[in-house]
Length: 224
Image (cartoon, rainbow, N blue to C red; front, top):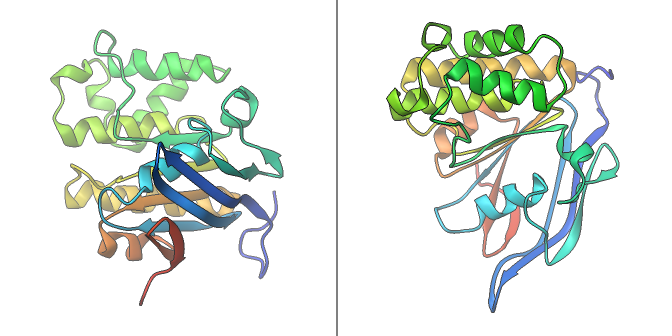
């Protein structure tokens, strides 16, 4: 793996000319976004500006009306499981099954990714977010903050090359938010990249190496 502390780390993600329209409503209009290995970038903007749409396109869950997304030089496409396997996503939906325990949920995800020893991997992921003591609980019994931590464990479980976080601080208390900051910092030496979309500018500036603003369908550097 290339040292992410080098002056010019390799590009991990390159999004070019992204456009997305829903009928006559244009949400994204010519978005360019790059992410280097080991970098954390935050995209800020008010609710409804298109941040979630951008993240879904980067994750390969939504096809852009125009433009392209490359991850490690390979196109990210909605029908390409191989490229999406390198991506971890924390979205507004926790993507956890209420009929399974947290342990069972994460073991299921570990098997989907073809990881060895799913039980161990699941327990380590829960331990990362300080939920190991709740491994036997169903998601339906958890508070909003605990659900957010469990969803984060799911997104981090397979050590994705690219981690995409949609409003990751929602429901987290100060201790959990600090833990999230530490987890993201630990990814950088391995050259793993993270993109956060949020309307919480203060938290974004504490966690990201670059802060960009999404306005009127395009991206630019946020004011200091």
